Image (cartoon, rainbow, N blue to C red; front, top):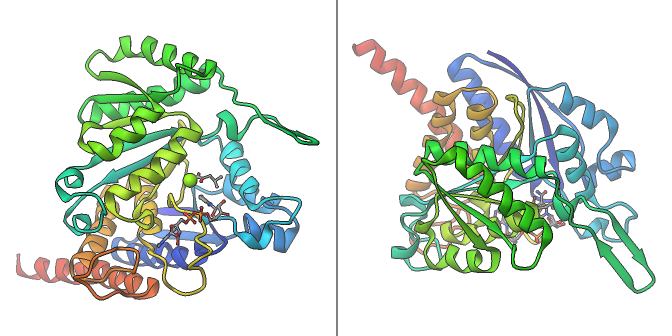
Length: 363
Ligand SMILES: NC(=O)C1=CN([C@@H]2O[C@H](COP(=O)(O)OP(=O)(O)OC[C@H]3O[C@@H](n4cnc5c(N)ncnc54)[C@H](O)[C@@H]3O)[C@@H](O)[C@H]2O)C=CC1
Ligand SMILES: CC(C)CC(=O)C(=O)O
Ligand SMILES: [Mg+2]
């Protein structure tokens, strides 16, 4: 199959982890006979440096003309005094592409069991999906600053809530049939509209158990009893914060991927973490979140399930063989660099292809 992919490495560790996605995709191309046409473009701080804007027109056009977009991360202290922030480019990109439903899966497995600072018996059965509304809410509301007064508006239209919640119900249907809607309906009017909309839609999904949690309660419950959750659906800022918190269940934000989707097969795929300026340029970053985001692209945008599973399997096998970056807090294994872990994943994708062809010779 032929596909065009826009690559937006961005800033900080973005380009380092993006190398992982590219090398893995090249291995998948070779093994499964696909053709991925990958084109790299600047965004965020790198867009400001090259074109004076965080989302250059050529970058946006390239993304619109592609079948999917892979993004590393944007931002960093280098652009702190600049009139335009790198993060603005990412927000505009999400909005322009209309990718309103952001999937952030958080699933534990043997490789992650000893990494979390939380007790193993609490985190070991974690398998949840955060569906975060991505193109509305306070990140997109009007902002004003007059003298010593600053204002950010939190606006939601019913249709924005409805389309995201519907997707979350559909995902819950494919999983354990439980949906937790997270809001702050005891305080915020937008949350009351959110809750009313979820209640209305729940009538169409009577096979899915629906519950409502206030965001402060949800933040507590997430680390107290993560197995309580199946699908969590929430607005933009709550989803952003809860997903960083949920990364603690696995032990590192470096391993969390995400997919931002709309109605058609198009998607924007990026790790949950940011540009990690504290470790950037040192080959220390964990490329797993980026590599798993590429696996999500194969599955959600290209419907290449076997290929997506091959990536996931190779990554888990590399972890299980002891190849772990420094963020994977465990005393048992020696730490490897970002590029060493990438090499190990690529090697396993290629190795599997060799074993598969040898097996064919025998049968
Ligand atoms: N999607 C994006 O592009 C995002 C961008 N940002 C931006 O990134 C910059 C830094 O933000 P922070 O709050 O520090 O969040 P961050 O997610 O970049 O880093 C938080 C902590 O996690 C660690 N970390 C992050 N990714 C890692 C990886 N792959 N492997 C190992 N450790 C990793 C970092 O070293 C740091 O200690 C800011 O400019 C922020 O706006 C933040 C979040 C998302
Ligand atoms: C605009 C981004 C920096 C927001 C964020 O932290 C995220 O999407 O995870
Ligand atoms: Mg975030």
